[in-house]
Length: 386
Image 1 (tube, one colour):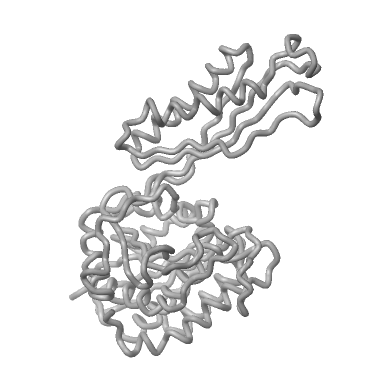
Image 2 (cartoon, helix red, strand yellow):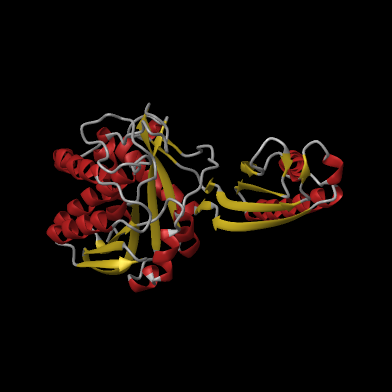
């Protein structure tokens, strides 16, 4: 790796920030302590502007380089997950039922490190805008910041994001042009049958049987309606019906998620899920109402910016340590909203052979902090070169 001595020297301080955030996890928009810490540090670094409360609890810092008209945004997420930590680490979560199980503590710390370095050197032309976002985990905090005028207010022309990834070697990078992460939608299916004694099923319409048929039939959407080369997922994750042994209930409820890597596939999943659910119930004498809710869109990298990010990553990690054709993942990311608003790219940084994301035993790998700081610093300096 090519990492400057000054950035290497920052690593213990940045790790201390990361572990402090890790000890005090906060969920979705309720990131007041974390946002306050971020804002205080940005002011200490000498950022020219520090604005709080964008997207409810988001923080934005602006660092002026040499005079110039361009501005780019670099984004980190701040929120944790409602998971009980099982690491046993000295800096483990002090809040019961909450932990940084996705590495947002590390993302925040790396971007803070880069902000400190950029505010010190200012070796670029224009504005480096550092964006600290709440509510990535299901709250669409990225969209909330956009709705508050993030891009126009700070004249951001391009936007960039980064996420750690277990299973990739520490400090290596992976990305691809086009779809990198899937859309994430949810559905509720309410089935109405007719209750009866379990010994006399002919006197009722069993919604549990209908639910079972719907679950099975939904699997045909991906296997028979979707192009086999166009990835898609329908997962039923909850079935609720009945309360006792000898009563057929009058209703049942299914819940789940749909994932796709293209807008057309997303449209197909919604259309067929509603049709299959409601018509299957009708065929069995019941009725069903399927409600499909769109959450995060596809995270789609822009080609030119992806190529640029790969070049920056190679300067940090070496040519052979950057995968530019990584396989897309079916997880979702609300940085997708920002990539719909401005051109840019999202990149993975390797976390090593650690527990997976959203796992009670997961921990961000502090050894990759210098690589992340270097990536952000070099990205700003190269994209805002004179």
